[in-house]
Length: 156
Image 1 (tube, rainbow, N blue to C red):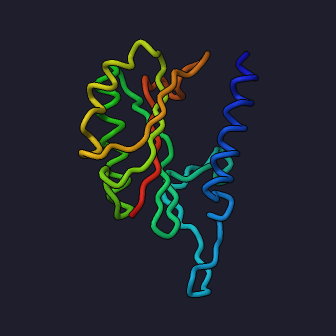
Image 2: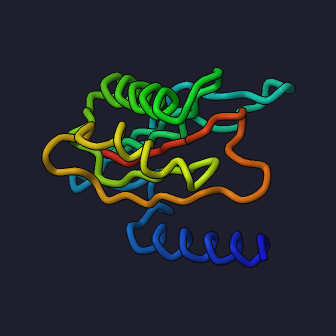
Image 3: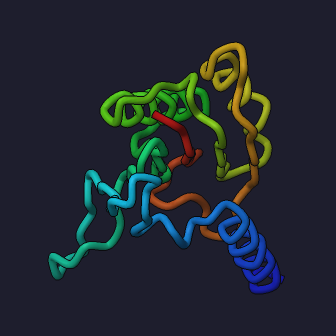
């Protein structure tokens, strides 16, 4: 069942990525004919000092923020508040803001936390909130013992 769910999510992401052209984000031609390359920030390396992923990636006027978690003792409200503040810092560093977020993914360790997470989330993205997907993760939970992980896509 978990494998089926993962395969379905992979197919869905591939479909969405193809639709919006994520495959072109590594390098693309601008209307002026010059080539732009993506910028990466906060590169996380594994134990062999090999790049594993970036905390955020910027391409033209788009910013993609990797999932942020809260790795301390606390309840879902404290974790959600912390994660949203971390997203906001990353967005501001890239020249964006919470009001410019287009898409948010929320991963809950337990779906029972949905209401309390939503209380803290409400209003954080201005009067025109982004589209959002919220899911509870299966066995094993959110990495790093966080009760919530959130990622987003925004414009600059």
